[in-house]
Amino acid sequence: MRGLLLLICLVLPVQALALSCMKPSVTRTFKEIHAAPETYIIVEGRLTLDASKLPETDLTNQSPPELTRVPAILSGTSLSRAGFDAPFAREITLEVACFGPWCGGAQNGMEVLA
Image (cartoon, rainbow, N blue to C red; front, side, top):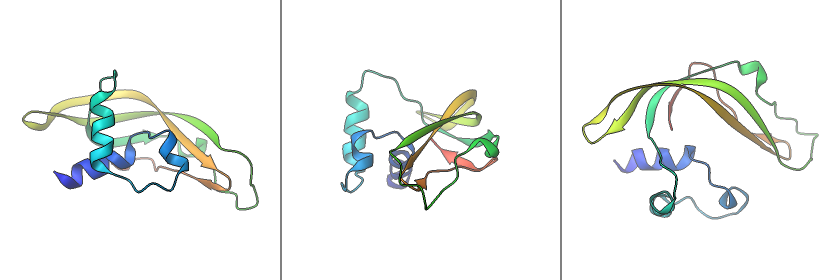
């Protein structure tokens, strides 16, 4: 269960913390999500996307942060009280951030916990 929460922590958007040196915290993230007005769904599944639309790391580029939105499909199962047993398949928008020359990424067909 602790590993599951850690993975959730890593894939959920964390706005202000992304630019800080704060150590990731499962407890802090859970409290933030619990207090948020939005509803979150935890999904274990496969990501389908056109990887050619992802930004590439460019070590010569020191520009301000940029966000690239890539259409994708997330299919698998969502978490219920009984476990990952509820079918899930939705079109999503993957937001990939670049900070200076470093960019996040994903691979077509990769297994994710989101």
